Length: 377
Ligand SMILES: Cc1cc2nc3c(=O)[nH]c(=O)nc-3n(C[C@H](O)[C@H](O)[C@H](O)COP(=O)(O)OP(=O)(O)OC[C@H]3O[C@@H](n4cnc5c(N)ncnc54)[C@H](O)[C@@H]3O)c2cc1C
Ligand SMILES: *[C@@H]1O[C@H](CO)[C@@H](O)[C@H](O)[C@H]1NC(C)=O
Ligand SMILES: *[C@@H]1O[C@H](CO)[C@@H](O)[C@H](O)[C@H]1NC(C)=O
Image (spheres, helix red, strand yellow):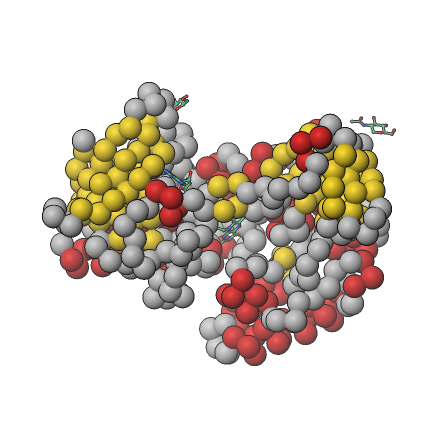
C-alpha cells in the first residue's frame, strides 16, 4: 500500500499537466497510467497525418509555450516531441501499466483508496491519498455501435484508434463509419492512398476550415457566443455553399450550441469535402444490415467492402470505477457543471480535461487544481 497527497488518474495531457503544476508547488503525488507510456493517444494510438486541429497557442500545456519554429497547426510528431520535453522538464514520472479499477472515499480517514491492477503482474495494488484528480480523458474507451449481421462480415474490422495510415488499404473498398473529425480525416487519408473510400453521413454536420475555427476562438474573446456562431456559420455557407446534394446538411443549431449541448464538435475540414465533391469519396446513408462481404444501407442499396473502419468515437467507463463521486461527473464521465465551474468536487475530488474544452481546458484545469490543493494544504 502506498500513500501520497494527490493521486492523478491518467497520464494524458491533462494528467501530465496536473503533475507538472503539482511539482512546481512541491506537492507529492502519484500519477497512475494504464498504458506503458504517457499521452498514448498521441504517442501510439493515432494516425500519422494527424495534426492538432486548433492553432498551437490554444494547445499549450501550462508553463511551456510551443517553440517559435513550430507551425501553427502542429503535426503529431512535433506534438509528441513537445510532450517528451514537457515530461522531462517538469519531472513528470507516472507509474505505468496501472489500470485503475476502483476509487472509494473513506469518511473516517478523509482519504481516497484507489485500487489499480498492475497489468504486468496482474496484481491489484492499493494507493491512498487525500486528493484524487480524475484525468482519464474524454476519449478513454473505444466505442463501436452494434450493427445487425456484423458478426457475419468477412472483411476486416477496425477502430480508428488502430488506424495509422492508408498505405495498407490501397485499392481496397473501405467503409468509414462515423463522420466526426477522425472519420472525415481518415476517409481523406484512405482516399489519398488509393483506397475506394465511402463514408456514412447520417446526421447534419457543421464543417469549417481551420482558419474559420481559429477565427471563432478569437472572436469568443470579444463577442457573445450566438453572434460568433452566426458569423462562422455565414463564412462556412459562403465557402462551401449548399452541400446537401453531396449528402451533407447543416444542423438547425449553431456550432457552439451543438458542442455545448450535445458534445458534437464541428468538423475541421482537411480536404475531405473537396474529395466528396469530386466523387473520390462516396457518401452513404446509415447501415441497415451486414451480410458476408456486403453492407446493405437504409436506402436499400448495397455495396461490397473489404474493410469497415469504425470512427465511432469513445465512451467513458469512469463512473464504473469512481465510486464515491456525488456530483462532479455525469454517468457518461463528463463534468456535470459547465466550464469554468466544473473542475472541483467534494471530498478532495477533482477532474481535469473533462469539460469538452480540449487541451486549452486541460491546461486551465491543471493549474486551478494545483493552486486549489496548495491553498488547502
Ligand atoms: C484524434 C484526436 C485529435 C484531437 N485534437 C485536438 C486538438 O487539436 N486540440 C485540442 O485541444 N484537443 C484535441 N483533442 C481532444 C483532447 O484534447 C485530446 O484527446 C487530449 O489527449 C485529451 O487529454 P486528456 O489527458 O484529458 O485525455 P487522454 O489523452 O485520453 O488521456 C487519458 C489517460 O488516462 C488513461 N486512463 C484511462 N482510464 C484509465 C484507468 N482506468 N486507469 C489508468 N489510466 C487510465 C489513458 O490511458 C490515457 O493515458 C483531440 C482528440 C483526438 C482523439
Ligand atoms: C508495461 O507492460 C508491458 C507489457 O506487459 C512491458 O513490456 C513494459 O515493459 C511495462 N512497462 C513498464 C514501465 O513497466
Ligand atoms: C492498385 O491497382 C493498380 C491498378 O490496377 C495497380 O497498378 C497497383 O499496383 C495496385 N496497388 C496495390 C498496392 O495493390
